[in-house]
Length: 174
Image 1 (tube, rainbow, N blue to C red):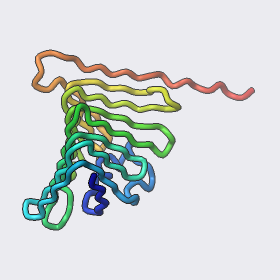
Image 2: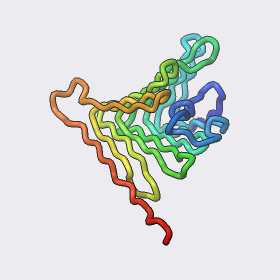
Image 3: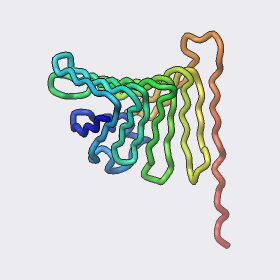
Image 4: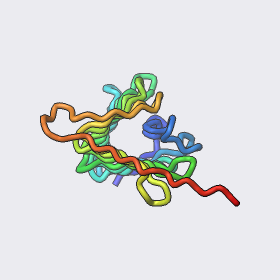
């Protein structure tokens, strides 16, 4: 098993802005574990295969394959993770957790866009209970502006399901 910790691989940028930020996650070291790693500096790709685990601070990602594309300046341009499913988890500043899963996740670093494709699910947990869930064939999250959109993609079947749990208001003190 390979264990690679490279500052180049800023996978933590994935959801480190807006609603998905835990203060300090971006500054934490990134660790990638996999059964195989191929880094091609000529093409600007790093491919990790076989039980891939990516951690950075509170961020935890598991996938079968992770492909990272980067520029000559060593800046990440695109990250693709594939699996059955890919899973993502991160703790938020207020203690809530964000969890996502899909068969494919793609992060476009130049546009700050996260795409969850094929059986996509995004959920927010507070105290171990879901406060928000979204299920759809495709979910897109604009990390710059905090906009989530869901659609059925090319599928002629399937529907978008969003569930919002009402927040319980605490009673005013007597």
